[in-house]
Image (cartoon, rainbow, N blue to C red; front, top):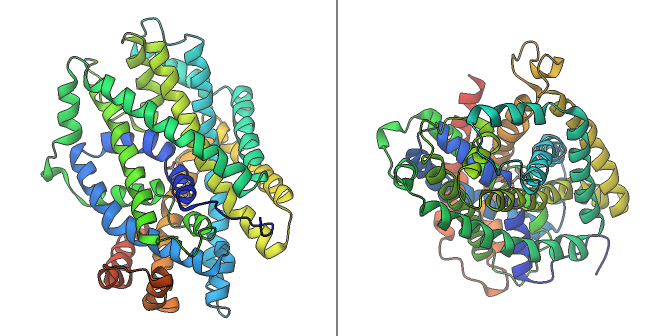
Length: 450
Ligand code: TRP
């Protein structure tokens, strides 16, 4: 290992780790509920377009910036443009990482709790939707329990990040990612074979194009950013550990495809199963996984195991994502402030724990944080809106402007084609990064403001 930064052992290691970052609650919890609330297959259709026309383009921009500078987001902007305020985009990314980690960790804690509930057999007898609804409210408003689960999750994340790039993240993702794929594919095959699954399949896969409107497009693009870990320098940071020998476009395509594949398969688990329960609506919102699935598991043969595997999967997926979130501020503190990795990981872990506590209280009815004045929303939703949506799109927009114009698309292409590599779509990518993507993101950002 060269220094305190470290580096990936191989090309495959980057793909695994970046896919581990991308694949998370975003795919298995957020994607299905967004699909359910935004018209089913029509949303899936727009989402796929957003992933490949916008996500992949921004992904490549972040990765090439990271590898060229070999720095954290703040250092990367500073190196390319030492003067001026551009490094603030990096600072925004570092800050966004801490904030997303704070509430993401709370939901990750829920998955941990639900995995335990499953093994205990809480879902193995017949349950009504109402019962499980109450169970969820009861569970999520248990402050003590949630503090334990949340701190446990942050603790594991801090531990892995402390061990460094090769020792920690790489080893863990190499084992966990394939496991995750296998479990998910198995579950989707089971689900598709359920009696009555065809209704769910139609909802999920047969698009009604009249349902596509500005809201669907807005949420699809936001979902693409969140799911691909774009817009705040996570992918830039992971890209900074890639070797100069690797071919960036194929790495990018791999990660983006794997992430999208997992989201699509997750939907294949949820919708066919969901529609086999009479009267159950896909429009459950963020509660979909935690309220509806236990009912589903309770009504199918082998449901306890089915449920345990599913929530275990969520725990694994969430962990590889929280690791990547923590890695951004840690890389910043190591590079720019010369901190030791361990000290940085602990300090940021404590900070996001403190910011996460109000997100736990947000689920307690009648608590101040469950219905904030002015916003008229709970703290967790506000955090997700500010950091998981607006900040990522803003960061993504600024990154495309920076790469397209300040650094220059041609210089980025030079980085991509380093060592005699060919990039056939360079011309197309240049047009996208300079014109198409920034314009679309700008329009989307305006719709948030107005
Ligand atoms: N992409 C992850 C998911 O789908 C979450 C995540 C990890 C993330 N790092 C990120 C989201 C950086 C936005 C930015 O669950």
